[in-house]
Image 1 (spheres, rainbow, N blue to C red):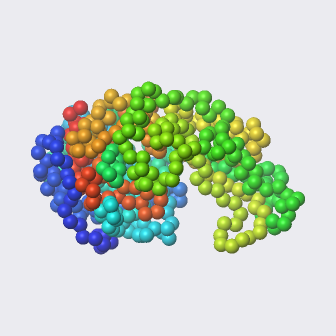
Image 2 (image 1 turned 120 degrees about the horizontal axis):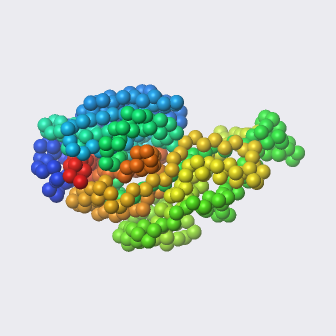
Image 3 (image 1 turned 30 degrees about the horizontal axis):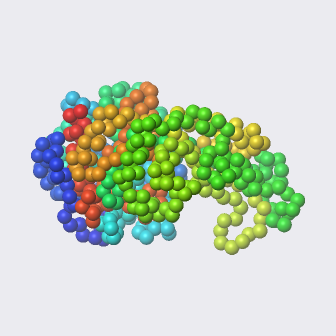
Length: 495
């Protein structure tokens, strides 16, 4: 895999300039530099083994490889935990420290079509990208193997420098995050895992948090989600032909495709931008004055033009102002059609009347909505309108999560970013989702969030990338992000 890099690596980009809480880290910096080729190969090899829950691909192998990586990085135990479906991993490291921190890893990745990529998605080649620098392209490069491998590189560097990590670790990992973590609770709620997490003060996840310009946004929570598959068939409906038939018969036969389209249209407002499901907003908690203030500060201190350019956005929904768009992003639940298919979708026409139509949707949830409530209300909404024959299958999901701004986790996060020279802002919550609820809710009941220097993007899309060496001196490459994790551990140890 080293040969796949294709670009010689030169000096690392800027490391921490401020005095670190761990004292003089020159020995750690030297270890990071010595181990850079090894750290890159470790990430490339991990990317070469895709664990894809949606396809049942490398399910056990992904768990085994993650456990091996953790043991190699110094975890004293790393146990594969079987569930009713795909396994997870439970690992611990006792460094004799006064403070124990919890960690969350995911090792699964999204599906991919190699024909859509400019570089093979499993080869993890390092290429030059103007404006970014040297980036590694591969499925899982930033979501989340890159940040997680960078954290493991920090543990390797500490050991090579003759240091013990300043905190103890309890780590749980899963291979189902990309399908809504349907069995992760079975890992976390095992008696020995819960007992270990009860010794922790917080749970955090490695993350490439920097924007292409070097800024960082600290999220105080995340939206929840349910992923759903709707299926409309002529058989369940009791109308139309039982199998695909020539389209000329449409004049006398009903179409399940049109029926599904009509059912979907009832879920949203006329323009498709607001949920219209019965009772959907019943438990939606409005933004607090402090959350609105945070959003106003974000709008004032970030560039709308840069954000649009990076996202490839032409206009915000309903031509909203930048501030209003940010406020809507944080506060609103969503109904999104991920994909639809029915009948012939290959080249050319094929004049058939399909007997089955499928739609895949995701519903983003905000406090105080719950995944169970969303499923119940969706099914009731469709049934009331005569669409009870359309099957509704929830494939995964979890509730929203929220962590207090005053928590030691958030304060340590802000402190390290600021001392590292990053332009830091706050956000009420991540518009995306992660299963943080399982940590912030009972019985674990801990603050949960993300930390990490570095940049990457195109999660779930072709040409996903993670910056190895940054062109912009304000952005950390892999080496700088590695030292950032070391600094963060010392900051947590002192809270």
